[in-house]
Image (cartoon, rainbow, N blue to C red; front, side, top):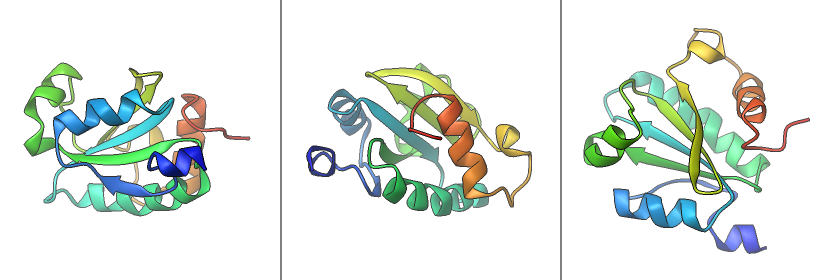
Length: 126
């Protein structure tokens, strides 16, 4: 219940960089998708992240428009879209950059992404 009250269990967009800092402060595990509206692969990731957010309520799943967050992209050294920033205890621990870790294909499975997030320890994956 506490997780759900903090926005876990759903995949949602946050409006600004300032919101990012607030969101990661209040949750132990956060997956943040830096996306761009015009990038087709971001829509592919959205589909998988929507499924995983419902399944892994222990983790907060967010998305942030990279074009509206230049400071954060610079600070986190995000150069490739899509990029997932994997945050534990308020610190960015790992990144999933593009689809390289996911088999370098557009039709990777949700389970492949789940496994990758599990490797980073940002979700409870068995």
